[in-house]
Structure formats: structure tokens, C-alpha cells
Image (cartoon, rainbow, N blue to C red; front, side, top):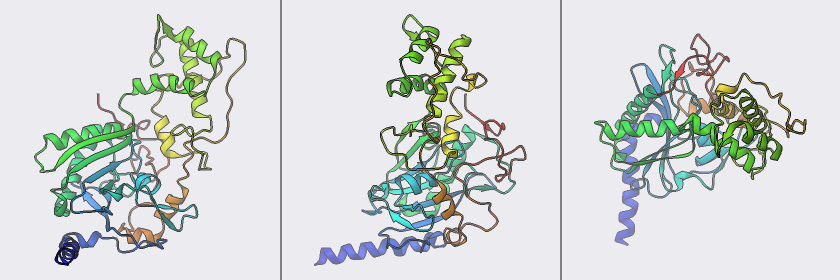
Length: 377
């Protein structure tokens, strides 16, 4: 009886102490949520550099928030929102197709961890810069994310002793390790235990090189194109699909890329059903924009050895994830209010698009093609 009473007491102490520290950001209700969550959540902004504010969404563990680790989640792009990970991947709830109601995610990571979702860098999602200048690079993003983490732990001091991990996907292959270096070498007292990357981009050369093997060994293109690729791109068992000097190899590689890109299948999970219906998913467009940059000027006009073109489009562009529901829900006025999003911020989108004016709302080119993003050497 005494042990039970003590447990109840501890469960109440944590909310009471924490409420005094960061009550203004707490999310007390969400439109479309018909179930009662057994965790707490906060949404607001963390300061990075002066004038740079990153939107965060933090959910406590459903198991033991006092003892469970804190996990930072970062999506990729670069320039795509981590709320995509929240609302369609590992968050505690997802948005129904109607864009109006929510449903619980059985496989949520906050079943066993406190999870922090950070929209990074400024200009992505509901993150912003006072001066509306968004030019950045990998090193600056790592610095900004590190400063935002310090802001987070200053706002949530009860979690400073919890084990801390950094997770990322896609361009998180750059975000996670570069931020981890800042955490390990920085002065901030963070109980850092490690980082992990899933389906990550860490090398443009390796990304290009392996995609050709991926396409062939998963049956996305057949023996004729594979034979021509080996004849024109390989020498003594070593293949160069990344930066070959052979014009014919470049054309063949670009052709293989076109097949993968336009297959209509979910390249992220070929054996799963395609769930989306939109032709263009900006997260996918941004990811694929990193591939074969050297070869983009070459057209898919090559014929195979037998004179037949293998290009067959099976449907819409993958990854078969329809972000319309999330976009509609996040842009509702009552949802923005519940998440403490200022009325002055532009509408949310899954990936940031920018123009030479560097405003976050102009639908022009991506950060890379507009020169607003520089990758580390």
C-alpha cells in the first residue's frame, strides 16, 4: 500500500514541477483528437542564433518519462520538416486522410522514449528568421541545432539527466553526425549516448553508385540495360556509375535513374503498398534531386542493344506518401493556435521552397539550386 501511494505521489510530482517551467508551450488539446493521450506534449520555438527560431514539438514517453531517454528526431531534405516524421512515421498519432481527425500510432517511438521533433533549419515548417534570410550550410545548421538543444534543456531542465540520442533519416545522414560532434565537443552538459541514421545520405558518390545496383537487383530494370551499363561503365570488374567520363555511360546511368524515378513504386519500401495519390511529393523530389547531378543534362534517349527502350512508367511518382492530410491539418487555424504558432508565420509545408528573395513562401527552386544551401566539404 505504501509503495503504491509513493508511486502515485511521484507521478503527480513530475507534472507539477514541470508545469511551472514550461507551461506556456504545453499543448492541452488538439482538434480532431478523439482519444485521451497518456503522455504530455509541448509545442513552441527554441532560439538558435539571435533572430533564428526553430519550432519544436516534444512528447513525453508513455512508459516512464522520468527515466526513459530523450530522442531528437530530424527529417532530411535538406529543408524538409521533422513533423513529417511525427505525423506519418514514428509520432504518437497520425492524421487521417480526411485531414480533420487523428488516430493513434501503435508503433510510436514515445512508447518507450521522450521524443523531440525539431523543424530545422530556420525557414522549414514553422521555424523562422526575423530577418527572413535563410541562406545556410551544413556547418551552420549543426551550430543552430546545437544552440536550439541548449535552449530546449534550459526550458526542460527536468530532462537534463536523461540519456540523450539523436536520430535522423535521409539528409539526417548529415544532420545527425554533424550535430553529434557539436554535442560531444561542446560545453553544454548533455547526457549524450549516441546517434543513429536510417536510410541516410552520407555520400553523394556512394548514393549514386549504389542506386544502380539497387535498381537492377530489385528488378526495376532488366538484363539488357544492365549489360549495357556493365559494358560502358565498368572495367575489369570495377564500375563507375558516379562520375564516368564516358558519354554513353552517362546516358545509360541517367536512363536507369529515370526508370527508378518514374517507376511508380515506393522506392523506400518496394514490397509495401502504395498509399498516396499525389504525383509530386516534395520530400521525395528533394531526396531524388541529390542523385546524379552530373548527368542531369543527358536525356533518356538511349536504346538498348536490341533497339528497344526499357522505359515504362507504372504510375505516379513515389514514395507513395500522401502529405495532403498533414498539410491541411497543420494549416488549420485552430491547430496552429493549439500548437502556439504565431499568426504572422506563413502556411506550413512539408519541404521549404525558396527563391532568390529568400522568403519562405515563394514557390521557386530548392535551396540547392537557388544557391541558398551549401554542403560541407
